[in-house]
Image (cartoon, rainbow, N blue to C red; front, top):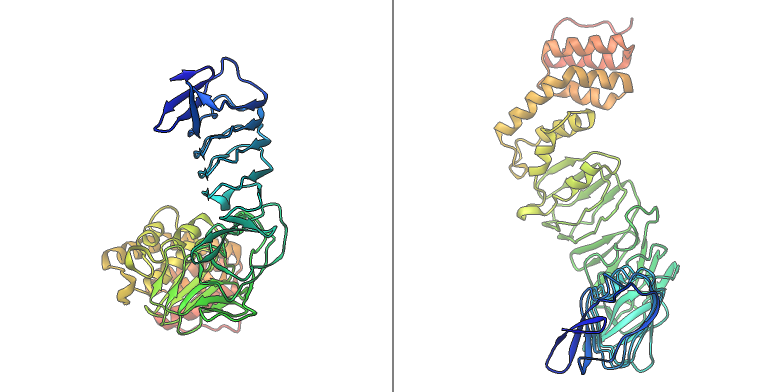
Length: 441
């Protein structure tokens, strides 16, 4: 049904404004009608203004409207001012996506704001709202259990924030985008920190580290805060330390989601007490080696924060395993076997006797064949770049034949890599035997 520039649908107690359909796209200010087809407007529907509202700069929603659906004002690109009625009760997630709003006044009657942590503008709450409140930085929602920290002021550049006493829960998106925030002081009343709440801070391309310190000055029996980490019982929630080598304390049994998010440590050692690793525990982690004590596995990863490294980190906790090697093995047998992947492949072959590694003989044979076929190119690449680590690892591989050693030694001699050549001569002598060498020349 249509009334002027508006399409609408009838409900039991009024109508839903479903679409704004003017003859020409308007600009400037617009006040919506309080009634359509003689019935009161109770709701602004999904995408109601997405087609013809891009030039509107100010929009007034009339009294009587109780709900604004998700996407209602999507792509109102020029919208800088939105006036909401006192009758409003609910704002659905994404209601303002793609607008130019810098702030929004929330009427006293609003009880529900979905996705409040993802809103990119400041909220001002009318005094007396029984559900929502703010201290200028944190945005809180009342619940029967206490206050919930649901979001924070997107304009703030606060480095330190003390969460007020009475807060019992911190929601996942509470600190989303607060990349300047480095230190949190948490209250004794805190009962729950949702997954990712302490890591969902900044744009993944930002150089800022996010939260680096958490303290409980008043004491808290549920959580344990150290300089490098935060835990709850035997669950490691977040690692803050910046050491090159991370040694997770013995007694930790679970690594929580995003625990090592963007961790720059080169090596992570998980003790035998760790039995469960969440699927997103090491998302965007840049470790080159992760040791899983419960399985006796030392897993090597490509360095430098590459796409391949990120994908391999997603295999932790998959399919009921602490680490699922399915994608790992496929990646080693797909595409060019460069020095980095060759080192990974050698590390993988060393696990063949470990049951938890799940490396069957057929796959292992494919890996050995792929490595044998690429040996001359790998040695040549190592000779050019001076990659002694790769030369040493290849020389230690039990699949090297006498002819492989001779070709590798020739390549090193050709490139003037005396030290590498000497290493390979010694390894050939140890593994295959033959005439000794006079290394004094």
